Amino acid sequence: MDVLTLSRIQFGLTIGFHYIYPPLSIGIGVMLVIMEAAWLKTGKDIYHQMAKFWTGVFALTFALGVATGIVMEFEFGTNWAAYSRFVGDIFGSALAAEGIFAFFLESGFLAVLLFGWDKVSRKVHFFATCMVCLGAHFSAVWIIVANSFMQTPRGYHIVDSGMRSRAEVTDFWAMVGAPWVSATIRNPSTIDRLFHTVCGAWCTGAFLVVSVSAYYLLKKKHEDFARRSLQIGLIVALIATVLQAITGDSSARGVAKNQPAKLAAFEGLYNTMSNAPLVLVGYVDNSNPLQPHAVGIEVPGLLSFMTYHDFHATVTGLEAFPPQDRPPVAPCFLFFHGMVGIGFTLLAVAVLGVFYGWRKKLSQTRWLLWILVFSVLGPEIANQLGWFAAEVGRQPWIVYGLLRTPEGLSKVVEANTVLTSLILFTFIYFLLFAVFIYVLNHKIQHGPNPDDLVPHGKLALPDTIIPKK
View: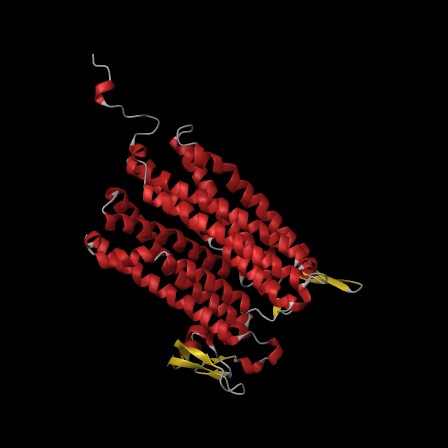
């Protein structure tokens, strides 16, 4: 394989592995805020026990997220130096904002969250938990801002200097996509993509809590802890999956307007047409290169309606773009439809869980509990598929309409160097993932600490050693 293909595989591997952990951190952070708020409001120590248990899981995901994220920053300079030079001013401002507003906030209060349970008051600890959760969300904001410039660049101009050119910020808030900036000049995709990504993170954290809680109920362990955790997890999961569908619809309509070639690839639409059908389940048939087409269960006019709220609206097909400007259709189609299919499946699972919980029958419905145990895989897979769809759908551009992917590659990197580092990364990441699964499983098998049911700052001593008067 050539250096371009290897570099793309390497970056895909590193970002795909990294992206396992930030959604977990964001989602678990929200769950911690809810559990600690319940502890403050009710005074019931079961919520204190829940918060302490999931704080340990949060710390694990946070540590691996930070460690794996650093690798990507080095790759910008090693494998993608020309791209880094082109977008350095843009990314520099966004990543600096992440460091100031997100990482410092999150890491600054992290020690209080992890080690301050018996050293600060409940309200101070709750405030620290909120700040860590807010910092995790701020981190998502600035990463999405940087990536949205790659999708729909705004607020810049091109500066030419000899043989090289670079994008330079002319309007920071337009580049960010801030809602108070005029819609005619701001980045049109940031807000939709941000909310869709954050909702996916909420789903990820909620379904992890749901999965572990359902497992405890099946094994008849820590049942009070499991029932209360499951109740919170299912409610958050239901809210998040509903919001995920709403934000996904808005994001897809934005793609149709700003990146029509990407939407056409998502839907396998080769010909521009009105009353365009939506393929619910299917695949892209490339057996005839002159007439490739999507095959599957179609609903006539539904794509036109969902995109423009008009059954007779015209949807742009891939034929409107030169072949060299078209994304790879088959993978885009599969990634996008896989993400959507998993999303609606998770919505159905959340509805079932809430319904059976409302009927007080969930703990006796073993088949549903087993579904809930394995539901934790759904958000992780959907997050990966959604990210792959967004990035592959942008091809052949590394910055949409401005810089093609081969043009962003470093000029001095050789294929054998990238291959060697790719093999090493694969081996190290396999070990890291094995360690993550081992430690997470150890925490789950150990379960919540019974001592955490003791009132804050007090130890319960056996009656035999308490002096009696």
